[in-house]
Length: 145
Image (cartoon, rainbow, N blue to C red; front, side, top):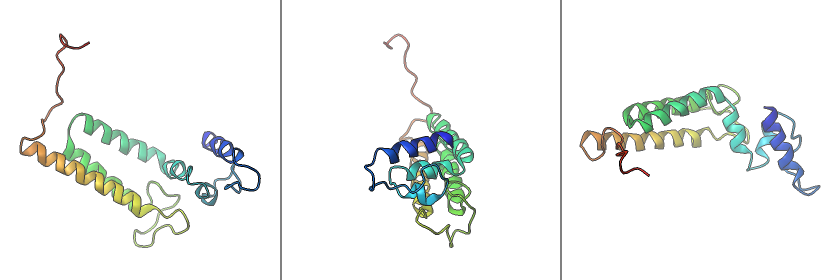
């Protein structure tokens, strides 16, 4: 959190006096982070970052290995987690209530995870019908530069 607070301080100090979008760059108040559109993504990723890192790492591994069905499942898990505030939110909440406040972006995040799951689902169907190769293409070491 110290690095992100330093980034906020740097961001806020680069704005001319009186036009600064930050009330307290060292604070952990979401209002502070939400005041600057450049920093909202940093704040969202910082909420539940450990679970988010595990989820995104698993997604990356499944994409590289072309295991699109597993990637689709993990994207759906991410959607459920984002829907309840388990990741990308400062508190847990019921999906139909949301966290409220100016940083209520959970439906956008859920939509992003669902869109990712749909893309992985299409890729998985493509594998099943033979349009996408099951394994990554191996490069011939003799032709590699």
